[in-house]
Image (cartoon, rainbow over all chains, first blue to last red; front, side):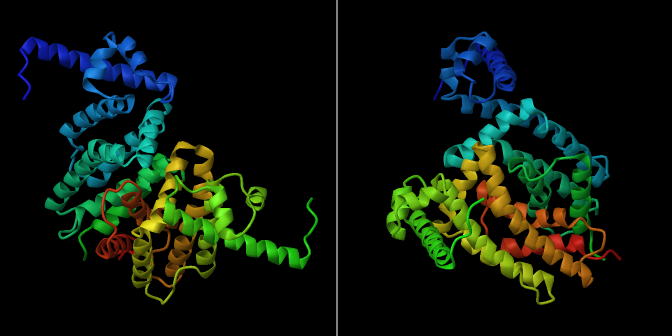
Length: 199
Length: 199
């Protein structure tokens, strides 16, 4: 087992990690995934190359963790819960659509998804680190709605979350359609209609 | 413009194309996508390598057309229409799940999807040649159900078809869950509940 680090060292590590993530996300937006290098990230973050290699084996691994850190913050907050499930889902999915439509964000995320389609291990990491935690916050929000009676009991909430998120992801990944606010609103309304308590 | 071929030449061409498709699909199941070669396909199909290169520029292009020929047959038939939308969708999606779970079929289709995630042009061909025609037969079946009153009027049938097919495709492509008959049945029931005429 590793020795626990002294608080100062641990704070310094955390600062370096954060600087590396910020550098990786900024740089990949500027130069694209193919031209992104560990050297470039190190130089932008103001750390030595060896600092990065101590923690990560590849640029894909750095990016996965950098996106993962964003996802973690988001997951700790959970989805908004104003008591109106449709409104909350539309708010979040509209914001997500704007994010997915932003080229700086889109390119590296797509590159990771693509790399994962070829590489089963990377794919499992991508799914486990980035997609599944996102899916869980939707399942949690649907469960809260089930408790207040907005969603019928007995519904498989995991499948319900897939009905919302998979059409959205696939449109983006396969470029089969635009991610507009109208699209998001229609999707949310159609899915929620199916989840309503049955009368 | 090319000269129209004499009927005999055209029949021979069609026989060769069919032999090439059969060879490509059989061989990719046996040796995998990475080891598939144009030479191997030609030899299995009993044609010269040049015959293949005259029509296709790469093994990906041959496979796209080979899968496309399967899709075309399926599209001409359309989905079954027994008058019971839920039963018909379950029949087709269960059979599709069995097909997607078959390793011989899965490997080349996944290889094409993965190659497409990296290559925008291939991706557009993959989507246009294989995914969109599949989506259209679902939209057509939903439209027929709308006409008989099983599906509410005014519903965006394209989005409804995505609610069925995208969760299914994404489970498979990202390996986020099993494609079982139970899964298919639950998905169909949840989606159709949302599409029912609203009372």
